[in-house]
Amino acid sequence: MRESAKTLNAMTLRERSDLMMSVADALEATAEKAHEMGNDRFAANSISLARIISGCAGDVVTSDLPAAELLLQHGIALLSLFPGGTPRSTVH
Image (cartoon, rainbow, N blue to C red):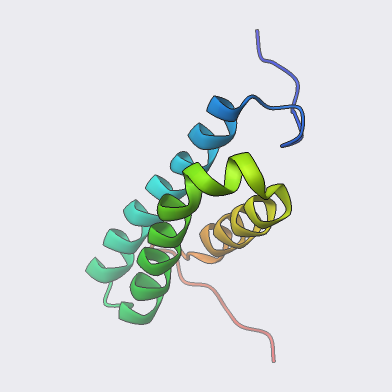
């Protein structure tokens, strides 16, 4: 059975840290795929954000929840933009 979604405030420190590391791991995996596809800019942005999230995971989850939330929002937003190998059109 799945648990209901929690806010960062409702999560334990361990859950917050695990969430941040999961997003960082996903960004690193996406960076590898983007690099393989020749999208070096997306790869660089993904790995940079992954390293920021990983580096801040311990400090941010204990002292600055708004910063943790912002980092997670940016990480998840970047992941959602990854084309994943399928062509995407851009509306101008």
